[in-house]
Image (tube, rainbow, N blue to C red; front, top):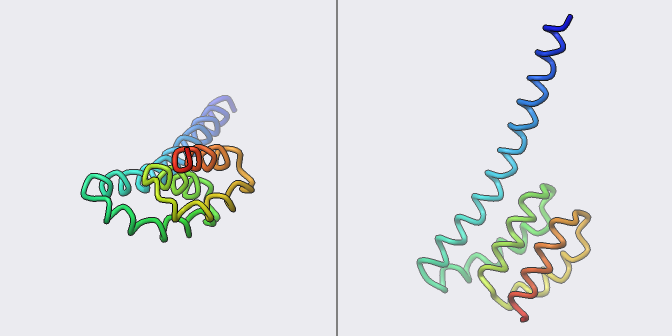
Amino acid sequence: MLKGIRLWWAERKFKSAERKLAESTANLAIETNVKAALFLSPIDANALVEPLTAKLKDKDKNVRLGAARALGQIGSVEAVTALTEALSDNDPDVRKAVEEALTGILG
């Protein structure tokens, strides 16, 4: 019985860690792509604004979070309208990232 409980607990911890890794990977992929675009040139980064603003409405919280952070890094005023709409996101982490992005863009 104790062995079964330990196995259940280990599986639960593993699934939790696996889920956190997947969330981090999705967020990291967006931010890494934006950093690469910023490194290459401002023109490349500005080309990402439209697709990233669309990601602010994604069902996955981590995608929305990554998109907000990436838009803040790009700093384009073209993202302000979409970011302002995202201030009403259900997730507090996303809202905070949106606020930080807007502060970075608008000063």
